[in-house]
Length: 178
Image (cartoon, rainbow, N blue to C red):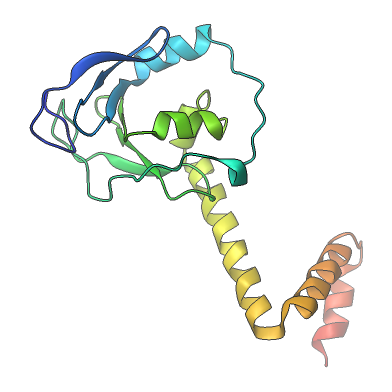
């Protein structure tokens, strides 16, 4: 099998972690990981208790921006966003159940404490949650730009207070009349 990024070198057997085999590219240092092997590894390997927030991630590798073709079946692999704090996307071939990890993405998954949650990343619920967080972040930025930082903070505090009120709709009706 040829590397889906470099397209020339053959993928060679390698180990991402102890007891986690994959096929790696010596040129771009990407790796093709079978989710079958991954699931076996995840069941038998306990996650570390390292707590590192996404803002403290030390390695954010450059991800391939182009579409990646599965080296096994030659179908386009689907890109899945990892977290709202990083631009990296993991490529999955749903037909072959294979994942392409660009150089450093396994370490990134580990730093984000996602190395034991990889199948969850490929779910609609995970991706919806990331989109909702990005939408909220954008709304907050627009509010902040429009009314200023101090006013935006006050609006956020009022919003939190309002969400705790049992008569929220009555309060909003009153405010909308102005």
